[in-house]
Image 1 (tube, rainbow, N blue to C red):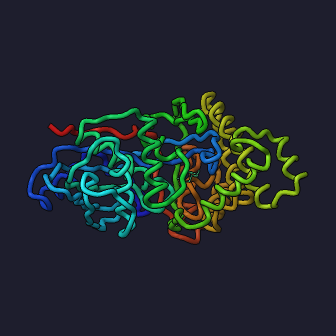
Image 2 (cartoon, helix red, strand yellow):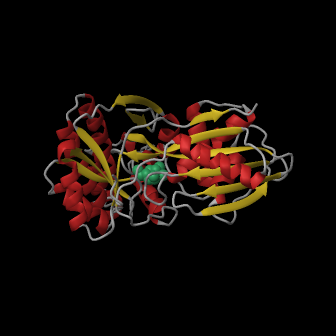
Image 3 (cartoon, rainbow, N blue to C red):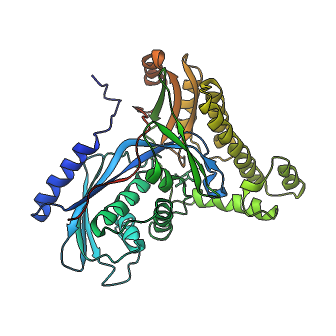
Length: 395
Ligand code: GAF
């Protein structure tokens, strides 16, 4: 029996069935193409993807499923059923009819942006989107939606492209339509994640290596603070700009090329205090991520846990992207027996904390959080899952 503070993934089959039923009731025929894409949790390497650093995310069993069919018109009609059951619908012209532009309602820009960037002709279609990826929780419901829509369009048109190229196009869609200047991490892991693996992504070369996650006695616990995060605000672009300033001052293409010693140079240049703090986070977080990948390969979870705490402290004090609720959760976890490490995950300003917990002490850890945390926490276990896939090709 699950406590009400726990959520588990519905599973692709159930989401698919819900989407198919909704499609039949809304559009009066069976959908002919279907695809899915997961959410993600980043283990470490936070706020470094846009500095060409290393990141180490895993794909989640929570997914977005898209089903649909061409409709022989010049309209794209979308129905979207969110994780909380809320239903949205909207339409926009097919890109064969007009050049698509971002515009209200804001949610449909995630779909429209991907349709606009799809590298083959898209005529009018009807689609239903069903997702159980928690929204505004820092687990990439946006990238999940973008990549699910893209993969659905591949199924619909039978025009498939290289996976890294696909992630880049979805990232571009997010930049240009919802207007969020994200890095490549989310679209990359959502596209290329693998069951039972974390993915070490080099955001400079765009190469990645799969790292087996054998965690028999250890659970990757995710705690949602239930503070909603909104990344399209000004904070995220500001952090990105500050990192860019630091790299420019050092005459580097990005902070990825900066060694720790170079931070002294920044200091000597009398650089802005905030710029120096951000750069200090990025340079150290990139090496923490490389070290975490090595420790994971050696199954040295104790070290991974220490690096998690260091990462959190740096995100909180130097990058300043945490919030009191996330800090409180990490503090509670820090004093809980059986916890090896914890940190905020994702863009920050709310959302989730990820922790490594000894399986035998998991229920005590949850109890402690339930009794001490000021907010309303929701738990889920992170089981590394597969990336996006085509479920049904248009025939
Ligand atoms: C958000 C962004 F979309 C990612 O690209 C990444 O920068 C992350 O915040 C922070 O690590 O999820």
